Image (cartoon, rainbow, N blue to C red):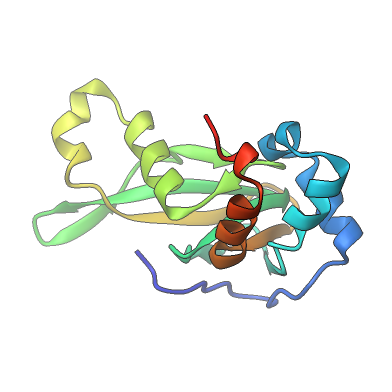
Length: 160
């Protein structure tokens, strides 16, 4: 996995708190958040990343991302003798409101692989995220430290 975010094209910046709230209302998190807690939660996503379709996105394992605009395709590569062969097509597509992070990407790739390829599943490496679709890609980037503090401040949201 990559140790940082590598987005060709424009670097991200910050969005207004109101825009972050708007995007977060379109995620699975929103069903658990009140109008007060969503403001606090949105502050845990201080940065954005922007890229264009077709460009590779290296996910930082210390961050969580929310797809705000555009789409992100996940694929994986598999070792084959002296070369790596990329999996045919995408294995999973993340769309507006979806959450992307390294752990989730690994789970998505494992889930999408067929029963026939159960032996290959153990060999899958280098999960790749690529911007897709026709629109530019905008991701909100969550800070894990801030998210951890948020969950400790609101333990009622962390209970199963």
